[in-house]
Image 1 (spheres, one colour):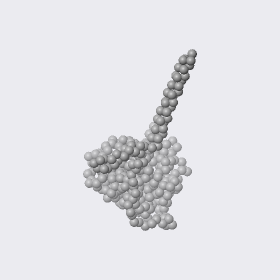
Image 2 (tube, helix red, strand yellow):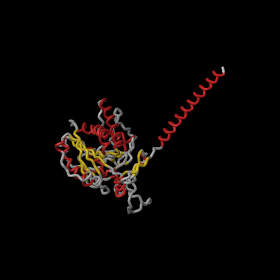
Image 3 (tube, helix red, strand yellow):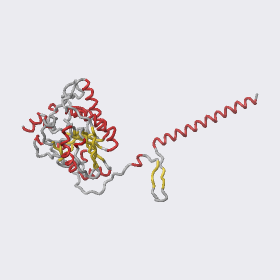
Image 4 (tube, helix red, strand yellow):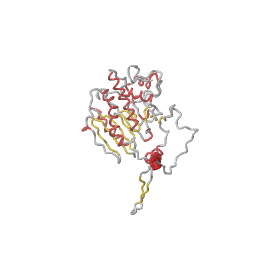
Length: 370
């Protein structure tokens, strides 16, 4: 009887011991998981021949690049004397509006050079619009992101008509062959779909920022990294000084681009927007999806892709806004206060398939000629 009790007691102790060992193993594993969740092991390996050291299994924080600037001499900012007082320089959501004289390009260039930023530019040269490419590229090489790495992404259905323009070091021309469409409205609206698709498939792996502009334009003054931000839009030159009820938003409630008459911050131009690739992807995805919904209901927004862009920026505020300096048409006249950096090329719109131009807005014409 005593022998049987002894055996039962031994088995019980054995099971308790096994259970305790199991608990210890679980605790050790859990501890390691918790530690690795917050701290990565850092092993330093030294090469005996070169004496160089490198980190193995380092945290991403240990690999952050130092972007401190070199010594620079410039005038101290004076908080009592803002650089511009004639026009709005900041939105209610603290997004800066970029005007000439509001920034120091040398400081900005130094910051962006330290980060080795590469900028992508998308333009659509469909059908006869290839005739504008030479002027666009030649003036871009002179004025656009000078000294920075740039990829020109040209969407075209006429690859053989693309001019061969010599480019500065670190800059390249990438031809993306796409189908053509009968109506210019279809070309305009398909831009969002194509930029979305290539952002996901290619741009995200090649550039940090995208600048999406019209090709029938030319650079006439410096355009640099001052425009770059998470996501930016550009004030349409027709409406930057007008009341919101004069904005040519889509006013039909049936359309997904609909904006009520008592809403709206600014009217943004469809021919100049951009930002980080991730943000441009979200913007173009939204616009394309809304267009697709409208098309299924036989609705075409009043200003096509531009209408959806304005809807997006109303409810997804841009982090920076470019003044009309960055998108101008000389048909509006030339105000004395304005530096024209990117201007429309004079053209025969009927000969270029009657495409929409900045000058097609009657209120703008009335405003600038009144």
